[in-house]
Image 1: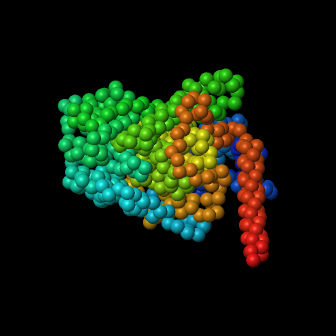
Image 2: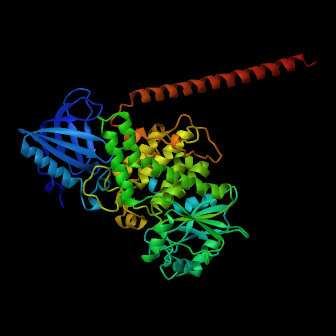
Image 3: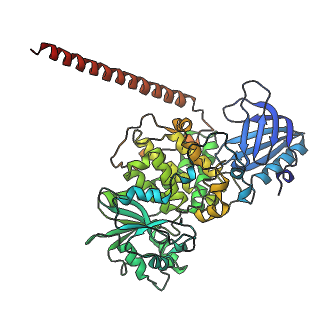
Length: 549
């Protein structure tokens, strides 16, 4: 298919662009296969380059011969184009609709993007499972790297290499895979160096109404326990949902078959519930007409902060089991690709100082989201404005980033990255020139040959010129476990995401710059103090030498 077939009118003059925080500007609108571009001849006006894949929905309005297109973006921005001529307006609108909903992934921009920067590091090879295992290998002699899933034949949503107990061979893993939802047998997610306890994750067991069991599964998860120790199974579904799953062939671990494990049920919502929550939240944030009381009640009714609280509470529980109880845990919901990954990732941010560094956090995204099979292509297909909702869209990753921001806000000196880093990840998960978030799992990415045909996001982010934008000036390495508060007064609306197109960040930006200047000045003074101390010590040494006979 040629993009030209979809572009009915490639160019229109005298188009007026309205967008947040900029004065209206008149210019020429151009449509290409992947971008909507508005360019003006006026001095000092920025061109608008908008990826079609960032467009969530469009509305059309007509007043006489003048047409207006309102473009609602996946990053929650709203842009208005005033187009002279009804026919041009209709053509542009239908072209945008066609180009923003392409069926084939291989027609998306990452397959056509050619970087204008020098590639210092190939991001596709920055965080391989072998490298991550190497970090642990000295400490975890009882674990091994298994290639049982090399051809993605055992579990289509797992990577080719996974970390499993050394005592369990590949044949046993194949049997366990038939007993777990989607073939997602229990694998190592995190090893706690302090006491050797672990977090494992999986899909639900397929016990069904007959109470089916699997001896190999029991042996696998028992292999993670120390003698005389109990473990915890954290099921991210409420008990009644887990019980209902048995009727569909799913279920949970029976106490009789897992006597050394205590099961805890938590209630983390999924799918359309989260999507509806996001739609309500964005709607209330965009409504500038309401008073404060009404706005606060709409914010509460969206339940967004309730979801944040539930996820953080479960992550704190998981971290507590490991660090304070000295117990290993297994985490799963139904598939093990959504709420499970939110909990395993956040528990690591609480427990593991490396996950709070830029590269450590990137490794976490790779390991616990991309390689672990979170279906980004499905979950991030639409955002808060699209009318044609499918059942699999859900802001699972955005909720995780919001939870990270909540912890970052409570511990502003413990993270090497800043809020802009999290916002950038949100934007690229929904629309990007890079191939990192394309596809739903490693198997799909392999078939699409993303490593050969697209550029990795990390290749761009990890260049020194970009890293400086994402580095937290307050960062001081903190090797302790950090325990976030989940009290209602401790959780706040993430203005940097949800209000950034409604409220100018001018004063916050100025305050941030001033803070950076103070920190830099403080470093200069500290360097002078250190230099003067050295000089004083040298003078005292010289005096001592002269006085000695």
